[in-house]
Amino acid sequence: MSITGNKNENTTSAKLKHQKRTFYASSFGFAPYVGPTFSLATLQSSINIKNDLGPKSLLICFLCGLAGIITAPYTLKRFGAKATLITGEIIASFFTIANFYPRWFTMYPTAALTGLVSSSFTWSASAVIVHKVATANLSNKIGKQADIATQKYFGIYLGIVAFGQIFSNGVTVLILKLVNDDLFGPDHKSADTNFDSNSTLPTQGPQYKTTNSSVIDISQCAARDCPAEYAYGNSTKLDVFIPDDSSRYVLLGWYLLMQLGAVLVHSIAMDSIPVDAHRKNIITNKNDEESPTRKSLLNKPREENDCSALFAPIKISILHLTSLQGILSAPVYLLYGLTISFIWSEFSRAYVSCVVGLSQVGLTSALVDLLSLTVSVIISRCASNFGMFYIFIFGMCYDIALYVATLVWVPTSSTSYVVYIFAPLLGVTHAVRRNTQYLTTSALCPDKDVGFAIQNVLGGIGLMMTYAWTTAFCVYVKIYIMIGSVVAATVLWILADRIHHKKKLPDISKNQS
Image (cartoon, rainbow, N blue to C red; front, side, top):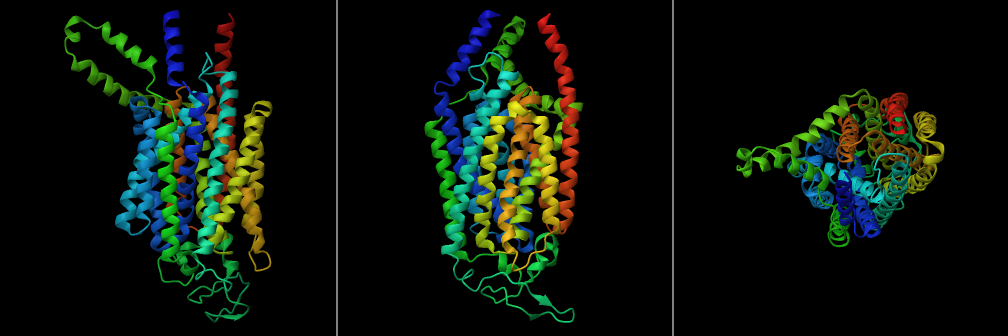
């Protein structure tokens, strides 16, 4: 036992010779990847809303991302977290390139490839890296000390990632403002327009102008926005959402540059985190104990090791997902996906682009990320003092109040500033849901490689659900869905937490005895 323990400790230290450098290289490198990736996803429901091209692309992306429950754990154990992360980031740049010429034959295949490889690889790999750095110096990787260390590192990590999103959104604002002047000039202003029921044109009031001098009634934005009314036709409302080609090319060029920069940082500055040597030793020892006849078949053990490496994570994933604790905690991950897709898709289109203009999407997204960063740091510092139970209860009460406010608000020219109030308030929601999903995985899932892959896949399902009904439902219907999801996820998590504590009590008593 002692020899094995020493081997494991030596392996851990060998993996992370430069812990801080690896952590900050991972975090600051991941930030310029996440920033443009999220910004581009946020804009899909606006710039590619025609024929539902953007939302359908994201739907395909997250649908293919379901395969990550198989590919991500296997790739992490086979090739290590660093190689997995870099591969995912390179693949993600293909979807950015496709947006230069958005057609179904460019968007759909790259979206499928991004979902199959990138979305599952990058988040799972980065989470594994942070968790291993946080617990590198701890003899017990599961327990109170590990939870506190993980909360601290994940708080810093998520804060840095949020800063990357803020920076990316700030650049988005500048590009859309400076390059897209011909579409959003001084004549672009929100208007409270009164419509006659027998006329298709406004009877009074100033016009909401674009280059096509189209007219839009902003009282039909926000919760009353119904994409099915304009996504598949030639409605003049599309001119509010779609930018000109010059601003599109400059913006996408900047996004691509940031994504490739992330690949460079991770390739150069981050230590390699190879496959868990302890698991390899177990397989090797098992093979050494086999009969001499089997030992002579040199290729046979290697094939079985590869096969077991592929199917072992699947077995663990199924066992966890089908357990009562796994079933009850799954809505936490689904809720995170629903939350961020509501912010990306519905809020950015129906509240921001529709009311105050496409050029403001970057600004409101930056406000979301700024509050998300602040609250993430607060949660990381206070989670061990207050406990996750009170964080979940606060999140439920807060979210219900916020969603009700977004439901009843009717935008007018004199109240359009409310959009800039909703943005930071949604940032608080974003932070709570993001941090709680990471903390849930760290606390409830013993195998972190599989746990973070499950978290990513179920979050992708939540995203997929939103983009599946983007044009099918009006926004007010989606708000009702969000309220119900918040309540259900909170109640089920409380039950899962109680089950987890009941299972821990017998183990603690055995250790004490």
